[in-house]
Figure 1 (tube, rainbow, N blue to C red):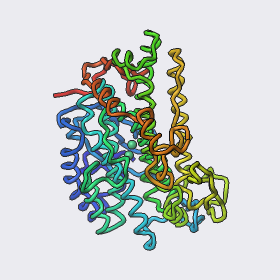
Figure 2: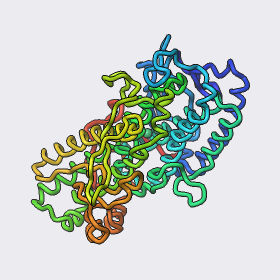
Figure 3: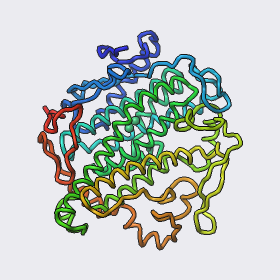
Figure 4: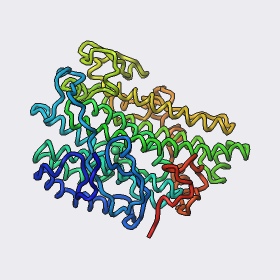
Length: 474
Ligand SMILES: [Fe+2]
Ligand SMILES: [Fe+2]
């Protein structure tokens, strides 16, 4: 089914067939647009961007490329096609037909899951609002805007569910999603990492690598939901999410490539010398990595959580790749290892698997994250530089769960407050690191040119050359 962009709200959910819903969403649309104008990418109304827009959800149509004027961008509502006779794959309702309507007894929990996911989408747009002013190239600027418009669309995806299935409280939640602001003292976004600033492009690349990857794992778990409209919505979002992680992985990779090349050419690993040469030294890269990794780890929630157990048992939120898990999909007797602080050291204890589902998803995320860090290390090694990056221990710098009670270094040693204070400048970005990275952030908008601190990408977007006009200003 091809999506009609002449419609006020492009969609593949037959919005025209439900006038009440259509009117409600058409009422929300101008509020969304004014939110976008207020806190979306700065100064972009008259910018033409080479964007990927979905014109259908099938493999041919979901990646259609063209220059689009930002103020004319149309956010649509797209669900993956229904899987006929889909059955719930886990929990107490395992084997029953997937729900097409919200079961009354699960309404509050489902709404909470949708609102929590939905809140992250506008948050990241707000966090990234100023980055366009310091882009390292047109290619990167285009990628930033691509991520931004898709996060806007993800908000639409969640708001559609709230409006279509949750009546009046759904509409109120949809309004509140436009009222909270990332980092606002009075009305912040729901989750911690989404209130951290994204002040520079290194932070942006780390964010899209790590924090958008949290998005991948959350969406993949929601894609298992017994509530079929949520499963279909999140499945389509996942296809878009892959690009966000690509922006992060290739962005960090290009920074590393540039630094490693300069290190090899000048035969130095002295951070001061490298900074003088205008590239980001590898220890600073490691500290940024430590920060974004640890802040993202907290997004998975408490290690032992009765909410996680309830969401699973009631069929609302599954595990990553639920169907591939080789067990009873009920987890009533299973256990799962979690970490605790015992006598001043980390100890592994067995928790009921149902309650440890956050921890299980976090472990899946760690594995996926670490694989990309290995790919980064190959880039450094290829330049002949003996340095490896690592993901820190999962207990490092945690703010949520029992591990938040202790200071744990990147290797997993519990350390005292004094030792933490004396060493934290080696583990997390310092004010000086951030100031240095900020000092590199110029604005490069000449087609084919790239800032000094980052290597050009291996290829352009949609096979376009590197000097293509990915963004046009007028
Ligand atoms: Fe998203
Ligand atoms: Fe994303």
